[in-house]
Length: 65
Image (cartoon, rainbow, N blue to C red; front, top):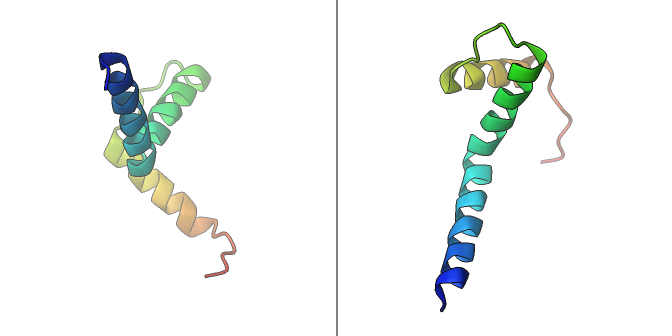
């Protein structure tokens, strides 16, 4: 395996793990927050998780299983 291929696989695994754990979603939220509310501080990861959980509880979606 070449160094280039190894770097490609490492980036792919990193991307997958960030998507799986929700870290990428938090980063996208921070970018959106900064662009829409430039003067306000960005919530911490813990605050974001609380907001997201509260939103899911207040706005349930129909799920089959």
